[in-house]
Image (cartoon, rainbow, N blue to C red; front, side, top):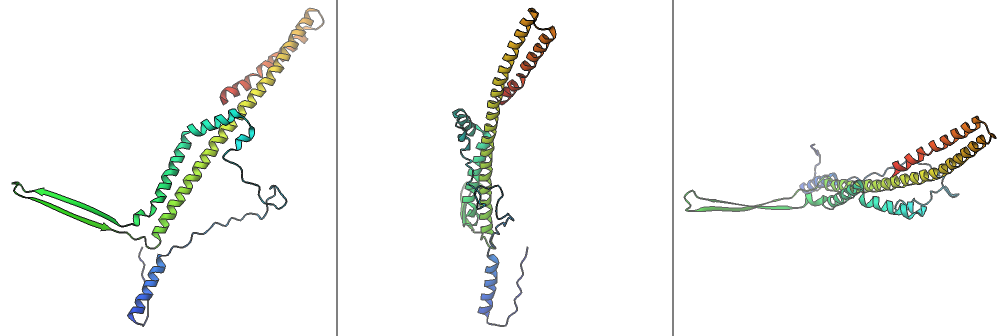
Amino acid sequence: MGIVFRIAFSCRPRLAAACALSVVLSACSVAPVPRPDADVPAAWRNAPGETGTLGPAPDLRGWWRAFGDPDLDRLVERALEGNLALRQSMYRVAAARALAATSGSAFLPELGAHTFAEPAPDSSASYFQAGFDAKWEFGLFGRAQSESRIAEADAGTARIDAESARVTVVAEVVRVYLEWRAAGRRLDLLSRIADAARRKSDLVATRERLHLATSADAAAAQAEQATAESALAEPRLAIERCR
């Protein structure tokens, strides 16, 4: 992309040079990054308090401890230590921070040296040359500032991705753990119901032998027992799946 400056003036050469230099330097400046202005309501309908302000930010670093379950705490700690996706995201954060710290190195002076040695074919003499070169790329027209902004943005994105991965891992562990506990509770209650249905079936069978109940009553009690025992399969399957 070429930039052409056309300046019409009738003044001294020094003043003309100063005008041209000011135009070039103004082109090297960087425009500020615009801040996104979200169209949000002035007050929230379901926020606590009478002023309509939001409540305190959720504790994403230890919210599961509110359950007061040591087993859950140990599971979450094990998941955070051993999850490969979370570990990978942390490495990405470290890499992005390292790149952000060296984002301006491309615009620093670079000095290189080289040597060359070659003997004559008859070994009567040899040639040795040494030299160096220097390179310095200027970050004009806002290039250096833009590169720094991009590196900082990449580091921020990596940090947010790592935090999102951590929140996802914790939420998944807590969700499965609560499902496992709920399935165990259902299994306990349904086991009690099945025991009661089994005792009822035995009592009805005894009444049938004493001619105090009909065979239909005994069959109905046996069907009720079978239904109660079949209901135990669902929580058992849920427990194994959560494990």
